[in-house]
Image (cartoon, rainbow, N blue to C red; front, side, top):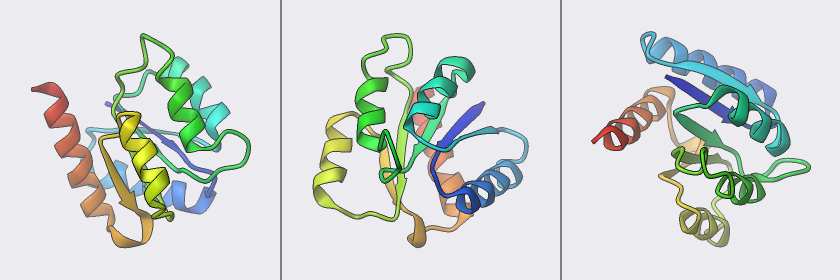
Length: 127
């Protein structure tokens, strides 16, 4: 299954990609996008099964990305996890209103925790 990480932090994205690939034991192929605009292009091209989305990015931010994604009928049901340093209640609420499946504060979770949450969300989606 493909997972798209949309995050402008190159180092964090690489660490997360490598961790998900290793801890996911071959279940996941991870694709990266550095901002919301590139993220929309990658979603259209790659059709990921899950998106890990940062909120604060240059250009199109995470909320703008979600709004755009939800207007594309064939892509609007892809599960999205917000993965951000930000714990702004307003932004979290906006994300929940746009159908995100969960919220991870980057500094609060290990790679193992993130992979467990990904597994849980994808299992729920299959049921």
